[in-house]
Amino acid sequence: MEKQKDGGKYASHKGGLHITEFNDLEREIKRNKAESCIIYRENAIQYEFYRNRKTKEKQHKVNSITKSVLSTLVGIAIQQGYIENEDIPIVNYFNDLDDSKRGLRLIIC
Image (cartoon, rainbow, N blue to C red):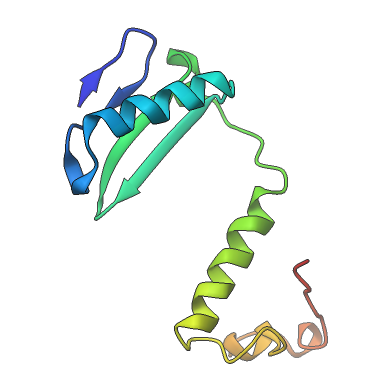
């Protein structure tokens, strides 16, 4: 990976992405003042950007991104047939779950 002056780095031409696409992405990341960005594809890091050296080691607050990622993964699982639909209780997929927890319901909105 080639290292940038400000801490960003990128892999050239991996996975069908051209270096100019990484440059465009990095410009947008900087414009939006993001602290970091990692693109992982085909079992390899294709792109990494960190605003500065400390940012790479820093723990980041993710707030509601967890809900977005989870709902995306549930949608993919439904589309691929791993989950029947969004109304199926998730506890059905945890055989070793304590019976006292089986009545709980999680709704992703």
